[in-house]
Length: 269
Image (cartoon, rainbow, N blue to C red; front, side):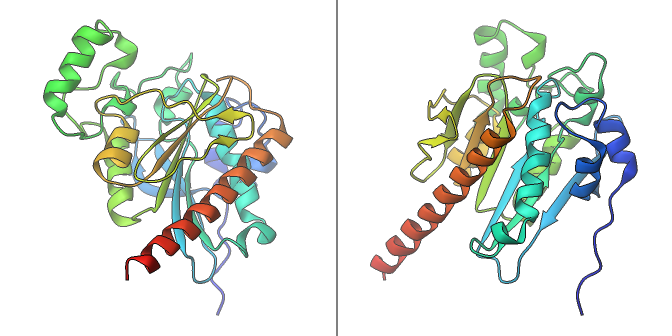
């Protein structure tokens, strides 16, 4: 018997659509977000959407709006949900997608939107990288001179939003994480794999390792490749055609990477 169709959550769209660029209510409802059971500091639902074909061969976690003032990142996640939902895109790749379009709803819905969560923590500096206590203090005090927008928090995983991602990594066990950010207009990569050279007009430019970042924690420490998409503008999405090209390039790289990984595994037998 087929699983019942996932129903949209109108409350999620009522809050998000007025804030996000290039996203209509119809597009948001079509994403069919579901409350995960986890919540932000302010008690807002952390919404997800799973798209799972029969017999998937890869699991991919896609995160938008880790920083609440990077509005375009959440919108792109919604557009990619629509592309992942297309049966023509599902069949040849057999990927189990899990989307979290707005990981930081408190920052996104703040007036004005802000980078940090409701506790004033930069979520992308709050993951439990090795020696976090020492390195995060050096980063906060010396490298960014106590910039409040980049406070790593009182302890690693002090925030419910980062604990949610940590739990997703443990329970969902993604083969790849795609984190959408803005506005640097580049492609970053961390992890044990050959990185994509480009997605659309974004070219690889690895920007470095930061204590508590998801790329550092997932890609370097846990060995889960992390593709960080830095969109060119935090307030506007790329053109629809460009978002589609980025998606196609991502799928192509994933397919090539999987083929390379399989070949390497066969050689090792």
